[in-house]
Image 1 (tube, helix red, strand yellow):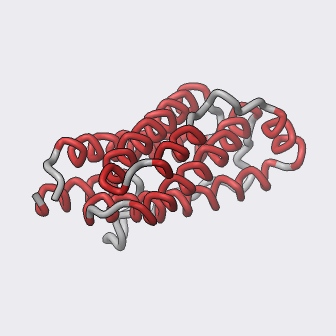
Image 2: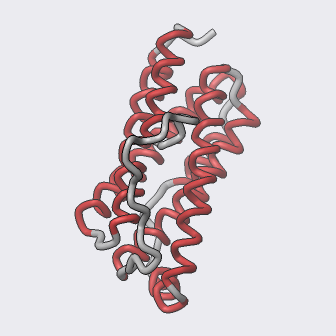
Length: 189
């Protein structure tokens, strides 16, 4: 079980852009322009993903205190590292977009986008013997929502860098959900 898990985790990290050091590309990649315009839909996506990612970090922090399976712990540690980095990036881009874009995004009602509060309550209340399974259920549902939001941004966004981030979020969250399904189906020790 360890070898397939390691390969699957590597795939998740690569999809998230966390593959570690890699050889330099033969031709330099263009960097996003500093004036990459962030439209209202881009700012809305960033604001929604900032809130969603903060919830993810809360879920994994509770999970790190509760889970016992080393493979589940490794996965959620990787999720935590990836999403903390993405959160910093998204917050920075929202600041760059200016106060009016951030204020417009903040006015959006975020209720109904996530069931993180109910999932956190369920995770906190789960008996110790069920914590791994409950964490996988709660986090998988949460990550499916993130992937759906990201796909919508890829389709509707105007900023190339925000759309690129959204595409990476879609790939990584989709890979995480698949890995969680594999972990959920595997006999637990």
